[in-house]
Image 1: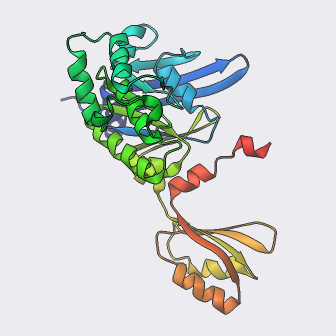
Image 2: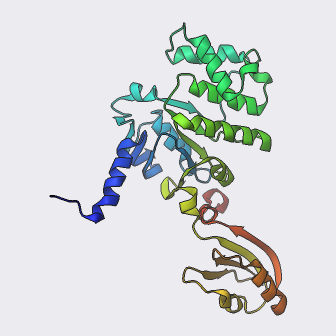
Image 3: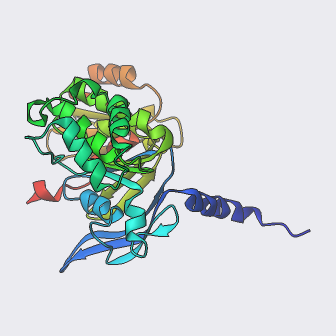
Length: 326
């Protein structure tokens, strides 16, 4: 009997994953004249996923989302929705996508019901089913009591809900939300996070953000990009990895003293800075803060800052911000 080598199993599992995914990007790039906004991106999103597209401003997040919706076509590479190429089957794949762009453009002088009715007609819904569909969507996103309200009079949180309702009106399988919690207060952010999690039960959702806390709160998958390139991808737990203790210390013999704490092979100490106050990174899953405090007291160090980061935070904060470096 023929049998596959064990080394092929991970590859075969990956192929099955790609074939079952709702959204697949294969080596996708996008050029604007001489500027490469997206550079060889490959990833997949399955039904039930809330995938966070994480990166600093200007990383290529919005361009990537616009290519998935066919607002732009890739310069090279391929995007498929449920196995169909967005370039070869543009209208069919667009019908499967709900999209809320950044800044959520709405008609502020319209009534919520009228706006959703207009959106439903533009999406080609049967006129006899529009009223019931508006009621269903309004109930699912929590704006049932706002249907008679003027959009311009709504709070920012309710406007975001109207934008999401508009993206959902045709019951798409894929939902793409560009910065859905931007500008919201903490309570509004929490409401939108819960809403997105609820919607993911029968949809594949991709959200973009430059706020890492939003990814941790909402997403079960993470894609980190910068300058249009893939930096990292995986679950938050996979990317978190080893905990990182970041300390700002002023004193003598810092590295030599802290290295005595190292016991495990995956633990390490890294010291940065040439000034009196050094930035120290301690990579360890053990709780070392009490021991470090004892050493600091004995060595008469001054600790200016001490906080725990996980690997996901470190991945994000290690990305150089080209806008700040200018």
